[in-house]
Image (cartoon, rainbow, N blue to C red; front, top):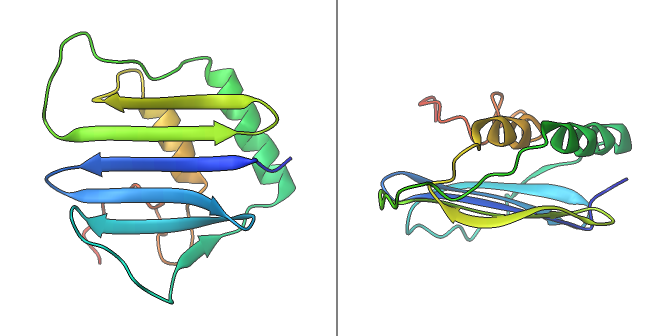
Length: 128
């Protein structure tokens, strides 16, 4: 049970842009400063096993919560775009300052843990 599409982009205009995208069956991970472009032959990929994808799918469904637009418009430069599709669209949104989002973000981060990002891509550790 691999996804047909996995796209997650988180932008913090005073910090990093995080990109997680399914490319040829693997998750391509990218962390850049806003406005910076990576042109590299040294891309970082994570390949999840079928069981890991199945667990991710089930955990997202069990969260039974979808990020939603905030009650008040706050323009602090934080935006998240997400489109994850298995056989059906599991979750899709493009929200500035999403609410009800932390558990979902932690779940996405958990599948990005690798040698280069031992705490996951979305963890902003200053060890780089």
